[in-house]
Image (cartoon, rainbow, N blue to C red; front, side, top):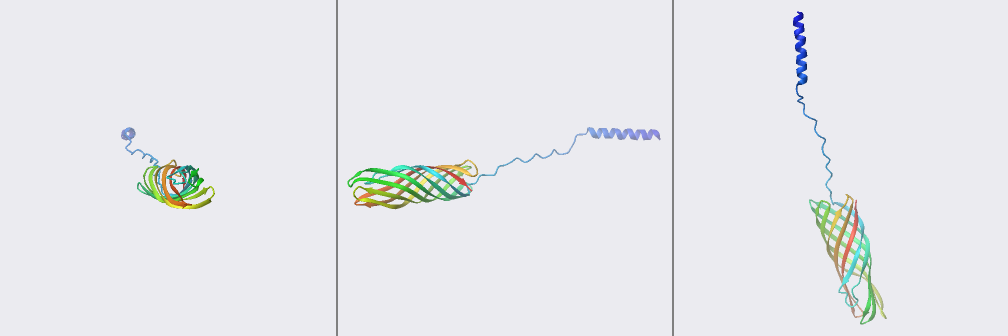
Length: 208
């Protein structure tokens, strides 16, 4: 009897030792999922500042004014896949002036305010947006002529252009753009004032 008990005890110890030596067949723990940052989207309202240079071509009898400009911008973008559409409006203070002489004597022309309301459409490559734009444009122009006084009026017209914008963060982006704005001509005491503007601007926007 003692021999049987001893044999059973030794057999149990041996099987326990063999089981301990067997490889662990449990699956390794699953790795933690990698962090995937959200895809950037251009959709949303934005506002910002812009500034640059403007110049008139074909100024008629009042020359071609040029100078600096600075102002504010508001707009909205909507992204569908890589395609981005939106609307943008801006109001700029400008100092586009010109002094000279014409057949009426000494003159001065001063374009002091610029406004535009435009549609935008473009293609996005992640945080870079390449776009074209077009719509309505207007400018406030003052004409002065020695001996004839002065005249101030709004010139209406159109705007067309293109640009590129890059988003440095989910909220901050910067852009550069070119706009061509052919505006109304004006007759002033038998002299013609033409105003076809070319604008080169840079801007900084905040997307809400």
